[in-house]
Image (cartoon, rainbow, N blue to C red; front, side, top):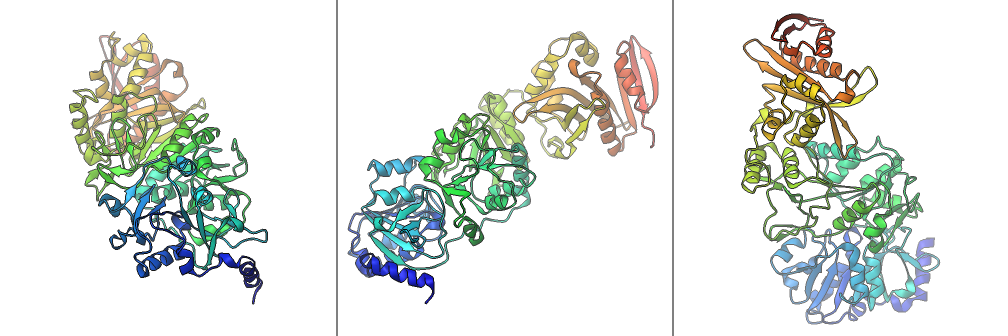
Length: 630
């Protein structure tokens, strides 16, 4: 007999009354009791199976009981219709094993912020009669760890009149709030078995694109919260170039543990709980559970701490990353239901998004694939369907990310939001969304749009350049949502710069003219913006464009630079890039019209090494510039 078995025998002798026969234990559960079951991967599998077996053999003993939990990962036999007389399932979050039962009226769903569930138990608003939990073996002081699921389990255990624990040698001992003493447990059933594991779907090219976009928004030293699933995994896979990230989250996953092992997550910059990874429960694989075991750098706290928006808001640079099922053009999102069909739950998403908004320099990121059902349904819709639960309101979301890009909504009006979200929708649905938005008066009635691939944003043309004076600038194609940016740019120009660009004395740049810059057929013309960006705000400082003359196989080129950034080499970089793109398209050269007094623009063209011929008419140089072979 090894030392572990010897110790367990000593515990059984000391607490013999707690190690009763299973049938005797289950007789302490009464008709009409409310039975709590531990969460997710921490679900006490053997206890649940034993209870349902007991009910099968004693069908009249337990009737009209209510089973409560957050989420069942793999079991939930009590939701089966054959146990309808014995159990009524009530969940705070729906999984695939309970979703159908709820939507068929055979089970219940309680929508609530996860941070507030312990309070429901403590105030008796949702009484708990029995708590079925899974723990580690008792230590030499008699303390058992709730292991990978502390969340609402600790509170349910403290409030329950009857606590039945499955002790399992496979359950890790995790530091934090999750310890309970053997004296506080009524009955113990010893059964060692592998703890449930959660195997997320492997990353696809689509989720990888989303992950890359999200990773670009996360800065060194940020404290992050991230959920579970293939999109969060894809996000974490792109964080290996970051430094000193912190974690304050509801769920810890394999991806976060991998970042801990690699030293990407150090928690050294956190505002509170410095040096500690804070979470509430874990869903992952055994190697992740082994990493958590007796690791003092990781603490599991109850959800009324981890998910408390006032605690979350204490973190500087808090970044909350969550997923949605659907978002509408005004910024309302649902993560819990599709129309009248309940799908998951509020969970902790709203807690973390609201907390991050309140945090100093905090930000919220909402991710979703642009379509569902094999690209037959757009997840970006004009308005949420009737019956949808609005998990996040219009003020909760800063960034929305799909595989087609990033939309920043914070501080934007409805028209701007609609255009930004349409720009990251799946291309096959953008024309439909434009027409719907027009009919709903969300955008301009005359909003232009170019359907098909010719109007799609060519992300591959994005590039970074550094001018000869050291100015670092992001060059990118224009987007259909850039009209407000263009408007601010043109009205920031001096009268001289405006007249040189448009060769007229006009001082107004109306919506109709701005559309000519923003709505582009990229097979016929190119508009490149020179942008300075601090993530939340872009400053447009220059525009370069050319329109193709198919007959001459050349293009008419034009540039304009914001006054304060002139003479810094920006025009040179823009023209170099436009030249590169034109040559790549096989064009032979550029044409341009330049005012006689616009000497800087003339010098710019002359210094590019083109073969130039010029003709002057009424104070305007008409230039023909042929590319030289290099």
